[in-house]
Amino acid sequence: MRKKYGRIRKKENIVVFPGTYERLVEKGYTAVDQSLYEEAVEAFDQAILFEPNDTEILGPYAVALYETKDFLRAKEIAGRLLHSGTADYIDAMELYLTISIQLQEYEEVEQTLDTLFEEGIVPKEHLKKFNYMRELNERLSNRYGIDDFTMADNLFTLEEFNAMNTGQQQMALASLEGTDISNLIPVLKEIVEMDVISAICVSFALTLLQQAGFDEEVTIKKFDMETVCTPSELQLPGEDTYTQNVQQELAKRFSKDPTRLEMALGLIGKYVITAYPFNWGPAYSEVEVADAYVQYIECLFTGEQMPASKLHQLIEEIDVDTEY
Image 1 (cartoon, rainbow, N blue to C red):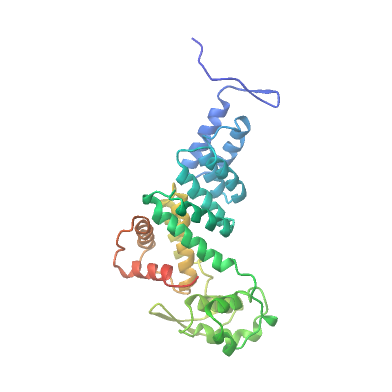
Image 2 (cartoon, rainbow, N blue to C red; image 1 turned 60 degrees about the vertical axis):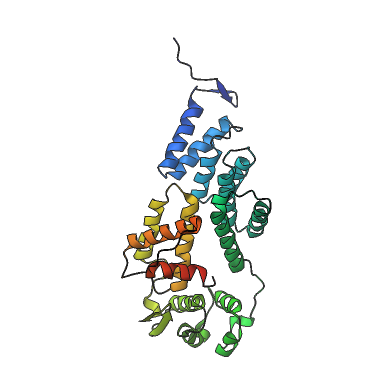
């Protein structure tokens, strides 16, 4: 008896060997399972040429494109998945919105989420997740969506800085990136040693001093922590081995859950920038910090009570109570 391989396929008048499409799909799925996303994209890129209307591969295909940061194509494939009538509509929508946030399409995400909530489409068990996504989108929109701040020659006095609101202070400091700040170094030194302004403003000013090679000691006070440091000797936020090990540990924990991983890395990014130059140690190991973030994210989804440890409280304080 002859073995059945399925129907014969043709591509540009070339006969494709039976089983080729199936092997490419299997290769793509296996690569996604092993976090080999570039290999997965390559396999799915070929497979979809043979079966452009097959919706089976769209989910893992979009995930692989997302993981390789090909966000434009990832959104296209995720959009096709949404319109395919998939039974996993909520998961597909979550992926689509996550990709849209990466593309900084904040208005579209906000409108889509508003519609989902107004029409009661989001199941109860997913409300926490989608509410957090809405909050994240709003934060990023507030941070990156303001483009009307200007200041003559990027110069200001300490008195002028103190007269600004927190948002204006952040934009004033952000506008100095890549400019000659030599005339502002005394002002920036005063700013980093203030404990009555937002922690993120202190971080921005300290980062500017670090990049300028400022080699005098400054005293930093944040979140009941205090240190004396020399900006020129600091690493930039997130460049230290400790933080990178925490990120790698979380990547292992959420290797098959890109949404939670994106949330975790976003929380880490917010923490290291807001708390700079402090990290979580030395009282906690990288594994303990990763454990705390896993628990924090699960509590956000489930609504369960947050553990009362000092580490959990600090993570929550920086996530909830600080402007970013």
